[in-house]
Amino acid sequence: MSQLRTAKIVAPLFAVSLLAGAIHTAVADEEKQSSTFFEVTARVQTELVGASGSAAEARGKDNWYITDSWGNGVNNNHNWSAVFLHGEHKFDNGVRVFARHGFNYDMDGLKDGRAKYRESYVGVAGSLGMVRAGRLESPYKLNTLQWDPFVATFLQARTNMGAAGGPLGAGAYIDDAVDYTLVRNGVTYRAFYSNNDGQPAPQGVERDSTFSGSINFPIHENIELAIAHIDAGNRGAGKRQGTKFGARTRYDQFTFAVEYEFRDEGLENGEFLFLSGTYNDGQRNWSASYGQFMDDGIQNNDGEYYALGVAQRFNRNVAVHAGYRRTERDITGGENTVGIGLRLTWGYRHTL
Image 1 (tube, rainbow, N blue to C red):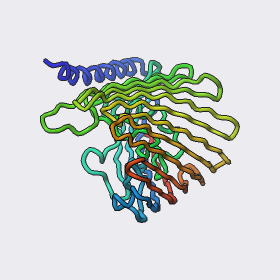
Image 2 (cartoon, rainbow, N blue to C red; image 1 turned 180 degrees about the vertical axis):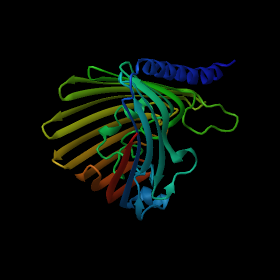
Image 3 (tube, rainbow, N blue to C red; image 1 turned 60 degrees about the horizontal axis):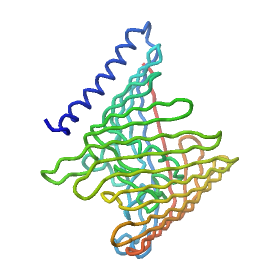
Image 4 (cartoon, helix red, strand yellow; image 1 turned 45 degrees about the vertical axis):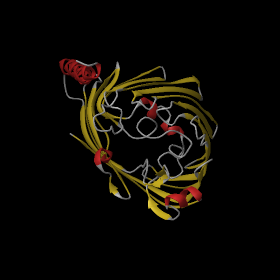
């Protein structure tokens, strides 16, 4: 039996055994039911965005759009809108068992194929950490995803020359996965395995396994460091590995972040630098971001990313944002986007 096939059998069994063991312990110790709930959460983002520049013209995208985010030169890419179903039971000893399923849609409707789903998993959490199994986001993605003040909008850095995107970067999800999360003394450890690499495979070509891990740790009251790695093997186009380091600090009403990514030849084949600064004025955030892609390929098609914007939150369920972004590459040209967006969130929880 091949290593890959063995991993495909062992990984799910390992996850199920952990879940079953924790659940058995919880039931054995339970004297009475603590709490059970079912929750539905819906969120929608609508943006009015105008695109211009030589790169936008070459793609036929120099126009105005009603969209949900923007990435890779197209609208409705790496978007925010979703519907989540979540159920959870908590035992008296503090152990939680839960299941979650997410649907992914944008201004064109429900996505096609597997992209119509966001995370979908079952899990158990207790004093020894949390284990989940299903369709998951990698630690590489989660490690610094929220450090971008414009993430999942038309202003975002990922896929716009400020940070890596896709399932092996800061975007999408990976099927057939198991992960483990532990938080101790403010330090967050994440480990991840999947027998799937999250990318379509040509006919007759097996997908590689994916390994990922990350650590987020504070070194001061207002300073956080982060490190993450992902390895999805080699499909003949070079190593698909990525490593990133980051730091974030808060001072009064200001937040600053820096991140540096190394991406091997099987991925973007280069390095990303990302910088951001945000000034918080109560319910309003003023932000500026800069990114740079240093292409290690033969074409040396370097890129730069700039974004300026403001976000106003009216309450926990309603917010608006507006701004300007420019992405430029040495060979393929520049893209400008300017626009305004609205975010709405609705949730309902029923306690059983």
